[in-house]
Image (cartoon, rainbow, N blue to C red):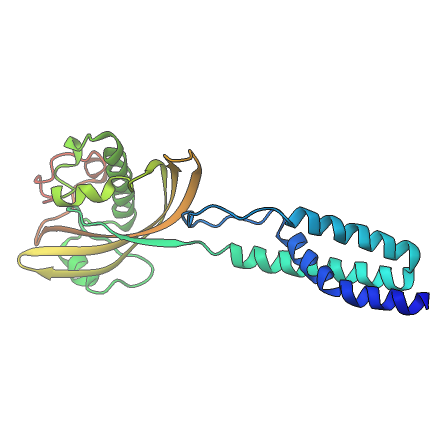
Length: 252
């Protein structure tokens, strides 16, 4: 009779094992790069279910080791599988795609992956250099985001269009703490209306702080810039390029 009662009791507790196992796997869940989705969180209950699970497993291992030990192994396996799956899925960053439009008087450069239309520009400007171009783009990108925080746009007036500057302001309710550049990819070049246009993608990691709860959050951001210069302009010496000096001195 005792054996029958025990089996019935185990069958009744099987759903509890699965539910508590799921709660166990969620302990210490990770955060993605996405912005908080908002809303309060529900009440307790997870801790109580976890305590019941531990008590039940200990009791089974003592009273019925042939049943309890295999169940412990099963629960451990479920927890490991859920944690590993959660780590993989949680690693996916939330990507916010933003569009930035700027004006630069620097020549477009080449990259390892062929950029459409770039050969024509390169042929007309023997002084252009890919490393110099990329360094210049990173410099202007960093200075533009700094100016978005400080309002000091004067050094960038020749390079960033006034209509593009509001795009560097922080999102309402958030403060930009740091912008870390990642990939810089010129991906299309074209000549139109007497100007050479270069389209560039920036991938950056942005650290922001919520003004509501002072919580810091990282975002993976993709930006697209459109740069232009007059057709026929040539690249200045690298040291002059990196000074962000007079853009009309052979580099307009």
